[in-house]
Image 1 (cartoon, rainbow over the protein chains, first blue to last red):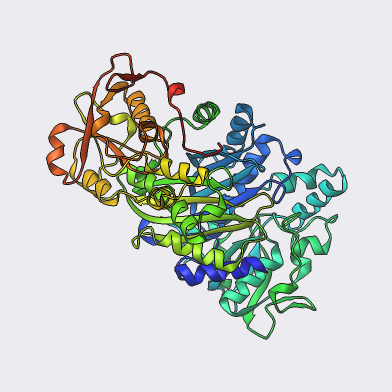
Image 2 (cartoon, chains in turn blue, purple):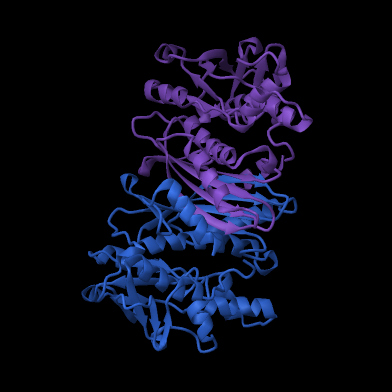
Length: 297
Length: 297
């Protein structure tokens, strides 16, 4: 996978102080920072989204990384590279959509440039760490519970509807306007005092479990039947489908009593040769994870 | 100018707390933040730059905004959208170039995605404001001196060399690898205690003077002959050429003694009906500023 080679090359150049999690934790400033880009015809097709929805999703993708860190989303900056057919109204609706992710997040402005080649969106989100215990994917320890909240696989099923001309509006909306888990993130980062791991399922549940297991050199074991999902969603979509933006956290068992709303789907074990166990099925290496996260990536 | 309409639309949506300067000043975090995107074949042609040079310039463009604010550049995040022909070596050299802007700036990582349509670079830079007096372009007051440092117009002249097949290597290097004014920014923001205005000349000297004059509702008057520039550079390039990334500051006359290296090029006056006066030549509105900043924008 080329992206992993690139990350390795980057890590060789800049060290690993900030590499490894979806956010960089800048301790001396009390912030986490995350930047993600969305490229037309790779991450989205413009005919699938209203301008408002595109603004919402672009912001949500970034804010989800902040939530996965446990920090409080506070600011975001938006850089848009626009083709000539974009007008004022697109910009207004895009910003309205971005703002609608949370009234507590301020947009600090950003940059507008031209693009000859399609719409490009790059958003930087900043979260405050005061009063929050910040996660790292390498923090999962044997004995920890694996918990989540919200439906898995609905976004991939919605993408499938879009690609095949289906009309299940609820599924399509899961892909276009994923609901973020603000409360789950806040409850964990404010209440859990021990080190814990948390990721979002932007690249799928199996991907998140694998990355956590690899970073902590442990095995993540889940029971598929406990993973919340809609009946109409396939097992493949639940495990490998991306862009649900649900959180997957690994916390000490005794911390569970401090969290009100969660679903326990499994636990972390000493590394047993496999990274992820899903009932009788095992995932030993990253290449065996099928990825549905980008429809043409 | 469409970009100004877009900025107006954005300002209507998010208010003007952070709009108006190239950096957003986030006071509660003690930081300024700036994000800029560079798009292949709009902001750069890949055959003009080595990978190292492209990394340097992409970072420099952003860091220059931090220097214009007076903050201390501290961190940056890099999002790359890459075409299929990009390899590990490009990434390494790009990051080496970005790092070479300053050893005091840490790269916190960023994002890598695909692009079918050309290379896209979006960088977010963060500056610390502790101990620094932060500028705003609206702060220029009648009586203030207009000062700068470094050569104006060389970058545009270098761009012209590239476009016409010329081989003046010094000029070309001014365009490809502009030198940033770290010391000038630091001296002013640490020593000047009054409000002051500062911008970089990313879109040209006349553009910076116009924006400062408009934001402060004043007139900026300069003597062309005092503007530092090379003999081989045209007047048009000195005034309108972009991408020199020199700083233009408006500070109280009595603060000049605290600054070691500067060139005074003019002064701020009460608004007299024109925004910018350059000897006998006046600029009354933004549309009359010819822009050379993007070779195909």
